[in-house]
Image 1 (cartoon, rainbow, N blue to C red):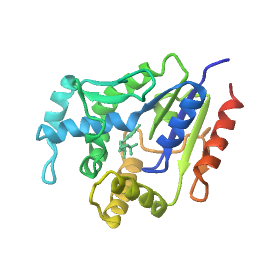
Image 2 (cartoon, rainbow, N blue to C red; image 1 turned 90 degrees about the horizontal axis):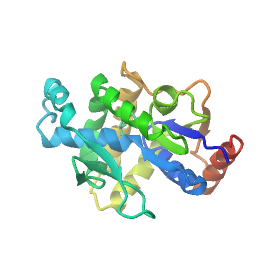
Image 3 (cartoon, rainbow, N blue to C red; image 1 turned 180 degrees about the horizontal axis):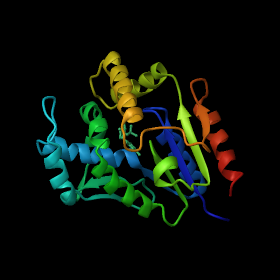
Image 4 (cartoon, rainbow, N blue to C red; image 1 turned 135 degrees about the horizontal axis):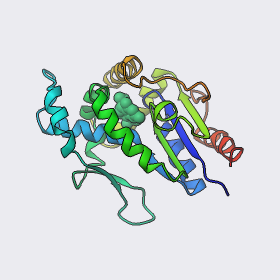
Amino acid sequence: MKKITIAIDGYSSTGKSTVAKQLADSLGYVYVDSGAMYRAVTLFALENNIISENYFDEEKLLKSLPEIHLEFRKKNPLERADIYLNGKNVEKDIRTMHVSEFVSPIAAVHEVRVKLVAQQKMMGAAKGVVMDGRDIGTVVFPDAELKIFMNASSRQRAQRRFLELYSRGEEVQFDDVLKNIEARDHIDTTRSDSPLVKAQDAIEVDNSEMNLDDQFHTVLQLAKDRI
Ligand code: C5P
């Protein structure tokens, strides 16, 4: 069977990663969470006094970029890969609200994008990949055989994200989660480098009223039609 590239883009917390993982498992493809890479760079910036509530030392970030090594590694072949920042597993540390608050300004830096996009292109070079993010169908894999653009109302998205953080034991307020999602959407769609836009040839899936099963089967059928 021919292997294809599947690009899944969309706003924050639209369920991109859930459907991307289901697709990858079902097709035997590699799943790459490109957002995890931007989050890991943000964690580095927070840990190295590059960004905080009061400042953003972009020059220091640019100088530090060669020292930032990202890698996806599996503990065993059956498990999903975790992201490693300079040899340390940061899979849990990157998912906090604190990292979410700073990730979009970091992801708007051109040099950060150049570095991560190059790595993403390499990871998908052999096809048989499902990658989710904001610029996968427009910049990383403009020739992807299947491009999906996921959407849902911002309230729905905030509700899902709130429950996810809450179930992980993070004490967050719903309004703060909603504000964070709207702030990230704003920065992600208005930045000058690779803003989040629906690729012309992407298929939009609005899952506001869909359950996980319906969503998965809709997208799986789109993939099967192209294989
Ligand atoms: O997908 P996730 O919500 O974890 O992504 C976190 C942030 O990383 C996004 O809000 C966006 O600012 C940035 N991002 C990006 N390009 C991607 C993936 C994520 O700019 N391909």
